[in-house]
Length: 95
Image 1: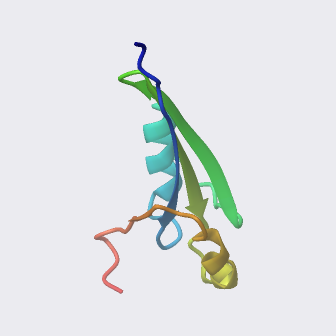
Image 2 (image 1 turned 60 degrees about the horizontal axis):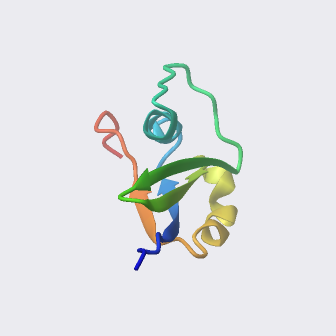
């Protein structure tokens, strides 16, 4: 009798103020790549973490949401079907 490998797919929304490092954190995790330069996210950016663990396929879909206030009206729609949210913040800003 053979075991059936499973496929898992999860959407994870990453939120936080602008310029706190959301994109850098995601890129380091998904591509093992870290860029120190700041590039503003417009709306949302998507990254995929695709791995095989114990024979099962795991796909994490990271939705990197722009932190600027001008994108506040878009945020609620980005949370649809998310299984988790990661909140990224800086300790340098007391607000």
